[in-house]
Length: 139
Image (cartoon, rainbow, N blue to C red; front, top):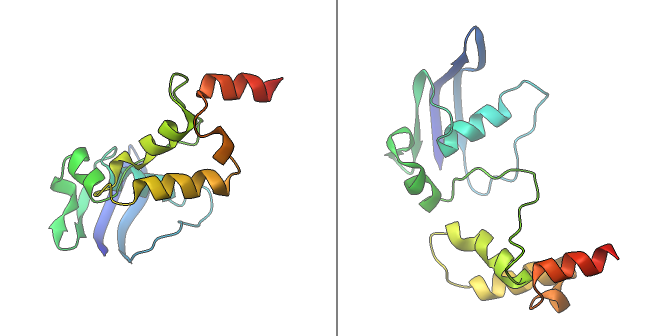
């Protein structure tokens, strides 16, 4: 569980988060709110990209704000971006596997990659180089 208390983030005169108190319990599926509600700012604080002016965040009793980004990743907290980022010189399988490298344990990674590729109907492309898969799908 993540416990947030008195969290305030300020950019000049703007406070996207102002004295936020919340408890986030697994599994978190998403944050919903209107534009400007502070969703992205909260994700950036959790991942260490933004430092709050005040407040505390605890994860299972540990002070999250004192943790390095690497330590946060081990807890499963990291920021991803919506842009497509693939490595052309890797197979499709290896690109998906790279996404799982932040998990605290690699147990079951092979099964997770297989499941993900099957889900998006890319099982047959698992051993293709991404560069080849992209060029053949664009034709």
